[in-house]
Length: 364
Image 1 (cartoon, rainbow, N blue to C red):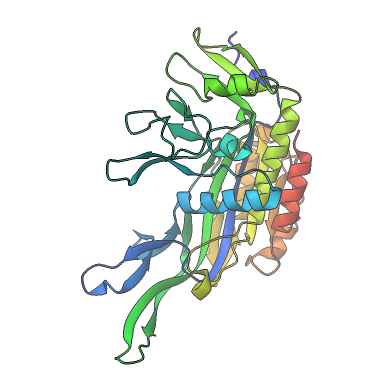
Image 2 (image 1 turned 180 degrees about the vertical axis):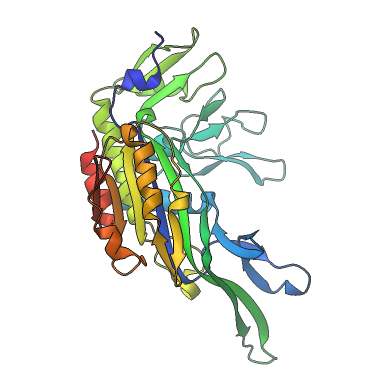
């Protein structure tokens, strides 16, 4: 029987799946630029239409960047700085890259990268700060999957703020800023088993720069790929499962402490989740999205849907099902707090930060 990467790693919890909600009572977290036509002096938020209603959202790219920054701030890990590595004829930057080193930078390990060398990259250019430019294409798919952070239908209100720039010697200049009050929800899934392990599937598809195998020869080991005859796997030496658990745990704790966002001087919003549902599992992302409804203008957890989800996936859970919530946030908080077990799966309820800490300690 052919072994998979999961078999090689041999860990119990292969994925961490979850969802979180942010309370944004008067916010402008992710801009879409200026309006069109007569609205060219209006700063607009990113939004889409659903059921004939305008729903605000934060792009996955934006909140993932906030998460990366939060993770570095919380852990003190080295930051994979994005640097210019290519310039066009007029001197403008036309190619950038992070450090592309997942051995040194856990950030690269988690979020992945893409790099393709070409004519626009000259490894001998004196403007390049790093010691090495990869000579082949690198594709490290992100181990962290995520949705957009979107407003929940029925729990969104959008409006505009009218302002003026007052000039000393002329009439005030008007401007408009769109903003919203909303509950924003995102889904996520982390492939824990992929952390610290990198594939080369053939001659041209590699997740790790071959240069790094030599540079970090004391930290990695190379083995034949279990599926691809011309491929290989490079993995960290030592206790790989411990490394994976530590990195995964820090990422989940960073989600519970998320911070960032646009226009914070005008619309300061706490991004710490008010509700977080998360669990260790042996399968990728599961349907959390339908679990949130609304009641009298407050989010409500669909308990029947939650019980069905746990029942359907009960053989895939490797940890308790954690619900982190702030007191007074959910419309049916009292009912939720009565949950202790569903289909033999333990349900643990505390604040978002506390459940993140507990899950991090639970990983194996």
